[in-house]
Image (cartoon, rainbow, N blue to C red):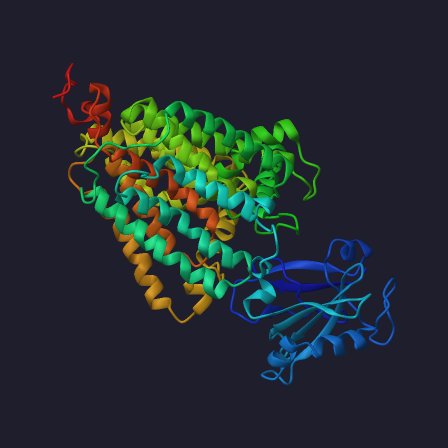
Length: 582
């Protein structure tokens, strides 16, 4: 079996190699590379792995065309003509990619030994018809995620007959049929506005999809900051146009639909697959970081808590050892989704009563992007669930320290909420409460890393997660797509860090609404500076945005215990809780 070392980007790509010697190959855009092995076995061809054809004049077994014929066909495609006009010295390699399918890749000419060739153009040709089926240049050579393949993320959830009705259901209970629209209606439309970008992304037009995300992110950032400082707060109680009992029925229906769609028509992306692999490693006492399978070599890029969360589902459903249907990943994603919904209900119930809890649970169940995450079977709802947990226990310093650390060591972004959780709600707590929060956070961190420390795995953890994430390039943000904006990106990142620290001090008076709004602002600011941004990250801040928008409405009935919760823990401030609200 012939093998060749190939360096590819962070997404699967059909990169070219030589079978006579090992050469290093990268894509045409700068990116972090990783090593995988491509074989010339029949199994590789069946799985869609490109297999180099060394004899260009003889058809490979099971194929009609020769490599030379395929190269001429691919070179005559209009996309190829336009690209090769700028790269006249490009070198072509031909591969059998799957039964009846060819791949032709053009690379920059070989240079000195040890230098890298860059893949410039990738063309697919059907062997039976002799016609070009796909042609890709630029970022879409290496990033198959950017090609707009139907159902690559979530399958049928992207269909108009699923997405548009969900958008209508999401807005329906709040539509002002006989009254003037309010700022809440604009807020809800902005949350749905990411759908415009997603439509272009699903069509493979990342030149439009990427920049279209930023107006909505910036709006939500400003909205949450203003809300946290008392600006733009509604003057009237929240009004819904349907009875709360109907909303409960809708939640039940939506949950059934979401779970049914997950079971019957969803896919497990590499994120969910990584969770199952990590659970398998933990169960068998293997090092968690390093030595991952070749079909998911960068799956160890998350925090340890992420992999712990998959252990129960793995224990029940197991794993075949291959990237198959992965029922454990489905079960885990469903559990994360339901836990977030339940957590939002209890949080809203504690803030304003059962009706508010129902509204928050409905918003989660009806929001299309939470279903997008569920149908992709990613781990992003786990981040949301742990952030909601941190708000549920916000009045207990040790508990919010534990919840904050657990959330932080899933996908690292919630670590930015550390200063916010240190302060909690209300005025600055007493020194004892601060100490308890810090100690609980530190102890939880140590406990989380015990399996990593026991396997002397800290170096691999740093290299494969922190370092990899910090240097992870991608065309899914303006920083990666446009390039040349490193100064501007570092400025945005610095402002995000400054905001994360600043929210520990201002505003001086805060309740749960302000804490939620500040948390959403911190996470959105952080996402604005990311090179690798995806729609799956919207559920990170969505629960906090929903809490801020819904619970900022005034209520005519505010119970004493609720008042203590929304204005901060009175005991932490050394003030006795009164029997009646003032």
